[in-house]
Length: 85
Image (tube, rainbow, N blue to C red; front, top):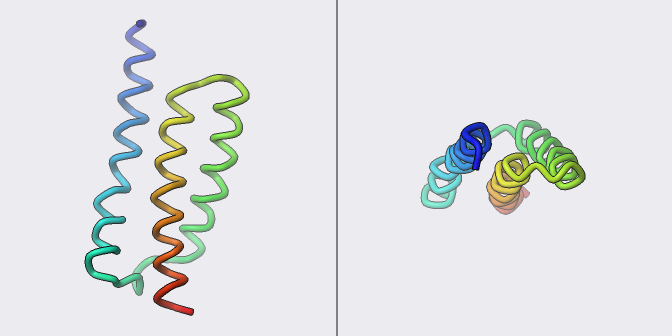
């Protein structure tokens, strides 16, 4: 595997991991008052678009990163809906 592919995969894994602490904090504290709904929705839309792009061009790092971003933001969105509406 080329070094640039390893860099891309490593970066995508780190992006995915970066959302996990916030998601865990929201779940454990059950508090979404400081989370912007528009931020979460924009992240979801951008992750879906980037996943489509990554799948179409077969770019694994983009697929991995945006799948993780999407899953974490969907969890956060569910908590926002649960605790706000």
